[in-house]
Length: 169
Image (tube, rainbow, N blue to C red):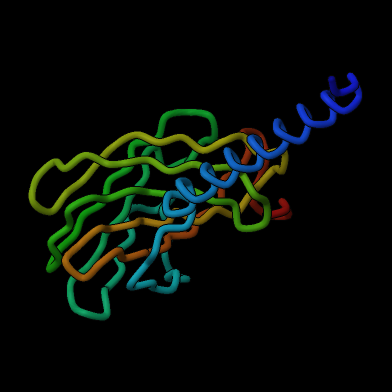
């Protein structure tokens, strides 16, 4: 009969192997969600100001993608109304992914619902940040006949009571 120490080592080895296998399965299953395979990736438009209103980006293959967020103050930890308008493109599915430009803020992706042939909308929320101001990228993922298209829109959030000038983005 094996000693108690040997049984404990065997049990811990089996438990470690099981944990490694479960972690591997989770990573393999989650990889496409966290890092979708993008066929068309556009650069961010430096002239886009989502606080002023919707921004529109032209696609290389023709067509446009418009994006807006309301309320235009872009508050954190409050519901945001997201709207995407597509023209010259058949969109099957649209998601909006928020990521911090200078700080990882976790997984913040929201699936939009089709309103009509060219418009999608839904709700999202930005997590709170410890800085007075923070630069974000809203990446619009569009599933289309051309594959997955990624269109980035950058913006800055400002904590209530702080001013944008002199704040750390």
